[in-house]
Length: 509
Image 1 (cartoon, rainbow, N blue to C red):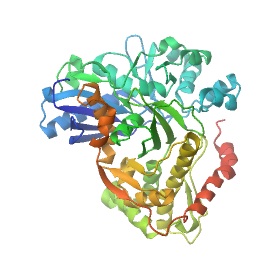
Image 2 (cartoon, rainbow, N blue to C red):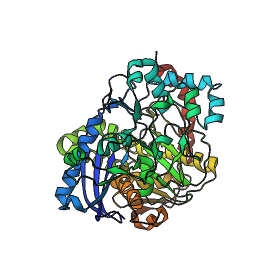
Image 3 (cartoon, rainbow, N blue to C red):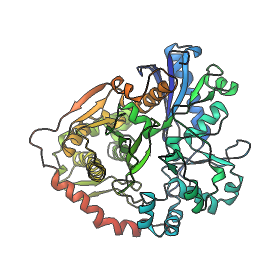
Image 4 (cartoon, one colour):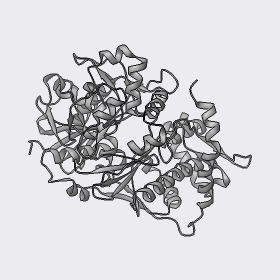
């Protein structure tokens, strides 16, 4: 086991970085947050400057060390959780060629359609690959670079994802961990790149980085990186894992059939399995942080993003006097005043397309059945209900399509702090909802616990389950059984009714 009694982990997300300093059992010692911006240079595009990630990691590292009083030599290792599906083109000299293309970016719709046509169309592609692809997926974006920015593609000696870039900045090694690779094209049984598949679609597989396991110590901090972070040169760097696999560990969902729900800017439902199931209905199988396990993943593109947008628009007065938190508090208070079902108002939470329970990047959000009888409180509650309907739909797909059963929902992320939302979720899904301690730090803590296995502080992932503590539990309220069944059926019917209109309005060109 490595020396040192603390682990430093970073959750490098879409809107900012969360740093946590924890002991070897994952108990929080100090935390810090550093935001950064997303650039939207064109409709459907979403980019970031990788230097912003590293700058945020450096600033928050120094901040948590300062707050805790922990000395650099007491840090056993450094690691991260990170947003999946980022693409950072790198030159032969290790230079970033262009801004990173993010998971939220949907520029490659045409490349996705062409790739599927090459394999016989979406239906055949689904049979071969397990799920259709959209312009938000990694392979279409790499094909987009080849077609639309050929000079970038030629100059790109290799590409990295967000975690790979951070490892490179920390150690000088260019690698990608298995969880990140599984979001592009990984053989989950052999743990190797799907080189034949990717080559057939037109990609140069020599540009694929070497693969490492999430628990692997990739190297030690270089002198330059140690100077940036205020840590000791040579401090072990563990590869880390994508946000979904890290969150699963941080939620204590590490065994067969155990699942968790994340509610942040986006949302996802993930279930651990030792099987390698083929994806369907927008549900995909990706690599777990545990090299011996995989995850069934139903990802929803916008959840907290919907809440934040509506709170920002409807609660400007509260935000102006008390900031964002005051706006959220007012929205929560009014949502509790509105009746279940929001007096017939239904919110569709597809602000930027959707992956699961339906895979369609051209969908958008809507309030449906809005009347003069509705007030601000109905709109507030309908947002929480609409996201919960989407989660119920995803639950049905995962449980019905893959033979798993989740008797309760283990919830993490910022959304878990909303009491009315958690009660609505319990009522809509008709199952208990459990909120872990420090739910917003679950991703970073999960990365830290993964690293703890990597440096030998714990014997394996099953040992981590009992380290995660539950802070609150919400039971479905008596008398509300079946209350949401009608609105939920209407919610599902609205997709079929509006799909054609969304496609006419939002199809590029």
